[in-house]
Structures are given as structure tokens and as C-alpha cells.
Image 1 (cartoon, rainbow, N blue to C red):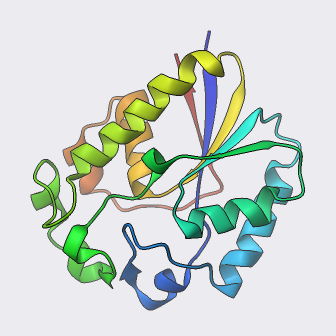
Image 2: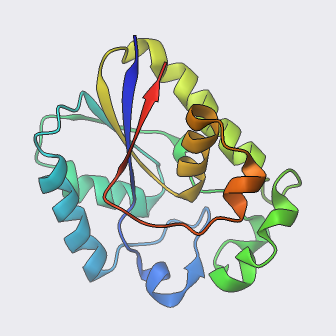
Length: 178
């Protein structure tokens, strides 16, 4: 048996507009982000979802509330779906922070965590939901670390490989958890 995991990123944030790497800072959606969140709700309205899981960071929660706030779907917040904790780098310019991203694949950012630790959080989440949602379709709303965790644990991609790829946004990704 299997769980179908649909992943969507949180909507566009004010930090995205400013080129800021939010990390574990909560952030807020921009006007554009609120529109995209509403579109997400319309796009996934009849998608056969059993539940929606969201990172507990405000930009993901706000995306979820706009997209699914008027539906009867169970919405569950989970800190394990958070972005990587950049520690002292939370809130710094994204270009500056990500220039040296490969240095923090297994070593933590000062005062934060490594990408491997963030990806393992997602693996822990996946192990917890596997039995409970067997044969069902769920939606995750998260961040780059959430997506890397899915790609690593479900597609077998290495962290080093993921770290050098450009993040190409799209309307959701689907994975199968067996």
C-alpha cells in the first residue's frame, strides 16, 4: 500500500519580494502570495485530499488558511515541515546566505542546523504518517527543506545533488510513500 504525498510550497512572501532568506523567521505573505494561496485552494479543492499538513511557520500557515480555511479538511501543523534553520543567517539576503550553502550540508549553520538535520526532520514526519494515511492522498505545505526531504527520502536523491540544483517552482509535486 502507499500514501500519495502532494507537496506545495508556501505562497510568495514579503521576504521573497525583498530577497530575504526567512529560514525560521515566520514572515508574511505578500499581496501576490495571498492571491496565489487562493488559487492553490481552488486548484486542490476537488483533489481527493484526506488531510493538509503545514509547516508551523506563519507564511505556510497563512497559505493554508487562505487556501483551505473554509473547507472541512483536517489541517494539521507540524514543525518538522519547517525550512532549514539558518541560525544567525535567518533573515539575511538570500543570495548571500545561499552562496555558501554546500558548507552546511552536514555541518550546522552558526546557531542553527545543517541541511541533513532539516531533511531528517522530514523523514521523521514521513515515517509517522505512513501507517495513519495508508492508501490516502495528503497535501504538505512547506519550504525548500521540505521538498529536499521528500526528494531525498522518496526519490533517493543525495543532499549534495539537491544543494546545487536551482529550485524551479511549479504547481505542486507528487510523491508516493511506500
